Amino acid sequence: MYIFYFIIALVFLKNELLKRKVQVEYS
Image (cartoon, rainbow, N blue to C red; front, side, top):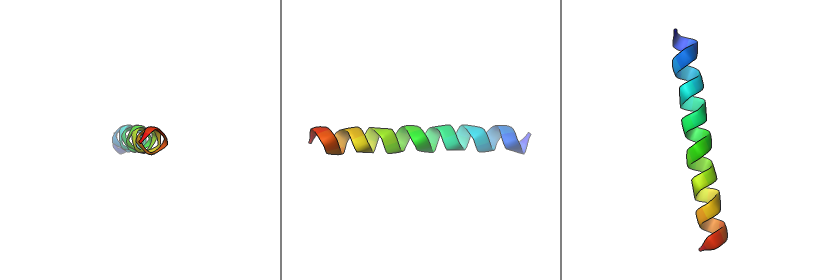
């Protein structure tokens, strides 16, 4: 069960990093 939350956390962090990378490129 903990692995399930761990995967969700990884996906969430990856999405946040991608958003920041896109914002930096287009700013």
